[in-house]
Structures are given as structure tokens and as C-alpha cells.
Amino acid sequence: MPHKSIITLASICFASIAAAGTSVPSKAMRGFAEHCFSPYLTAEKATTRLGMTGVRLEFYDLDPFSSAAPSPVTGRAAKVGTDRRCEVAFDGDHAAQAAKTAVDALTSQGIVTPAALPSSFQSTKGTEILAARQLNPKRIAVVHVGIRKGPGGIETFMTVERLLPSELKD
Image (cartoon, rainbow, N blue to C red; front, side):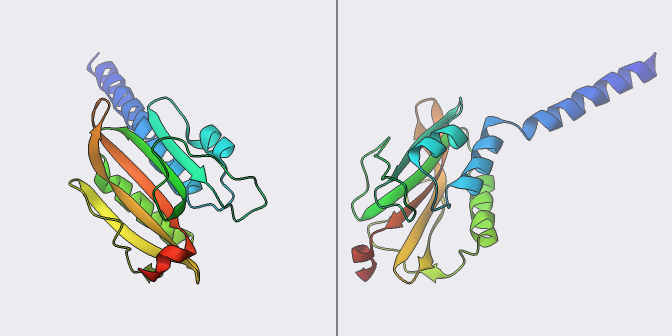
């Protein structure tokens, strides 16, 4: 009978490992990486692809690159000087993995040219990464990942905001 116990224990361990890959934080990080940098993401697509139980989503795109209609602001008010935000937040401290996921996504999509960080963006307590990257000659994106106080305690947030061309003079 000891073999049956070992097999049962191994099955439980493998099931736990498999479930970890489909956890809310894992899904939210993967969703951010796969969708938040896309110029074709709309509020409707963001809700469908990123909106899930346990994930708080903020999105707007006031001046889409595509022919899509502008997407209204959801969540906090639009940050002055930006025309787009995509943010996911979820319970717990997963900042190190979230930052790695964001950097890997930028790299895989070829968004690697550093840009000056505008003074309107400041690191906060809990910031894991705050960086600006050139999207094209007239646009930059600012990525901010870290932890902060959320509705259920500590939450991890992953944000990318696109700046208006007028804000690039900073």
C-alpha cells in the first residue's frame, strides 16, 4: 500500500503545479503580456481577453492607431498627457514575476528602445519597474509594475500608458 500513497501524493503535487500555471496571477500576467501592448486592443476586446474574476482592469484608448472607435476611460481618470492605458491588478505580491513578464513581452514585441521617462511618472513605494520605451518616433509607452494597497490588501499591478506627442518635450 505505500506505493499507492506515493502515487496519490505525486498526483496531488502535479495537480497543484498544473493549477499554479492557471492561477489568477498567471492568467493576468499572460493576458497583459499578450494584449496590452497591441495597438488593436479596444475596450471590448480588453474586457473579453483580460476581464476575469480576480482581475481588476482599467483601459482606455482615446486615439486608436487602428480604425477602431475610441475606447472610453474605465477605472481611474485618464492620466494627463496620455491617450491610452491598459492595466491589470490582482491580489498578492507577484511583482518580480510580473515585471519579468512585462519586460519579456516588450522584448518579444520589439519594443526595446529606451526613452526618457517623463517627470509626470514617479516611482512609488512597491515599484518593481518603471520604464519608458519608444514605440515610434512620435510615441512612447511607460510601463509601471509593482505592488500597492488594493481592495483586499496587497495587490500587484501591471500598467502601460501611451503618451501624447505633446508630452514628449519633457
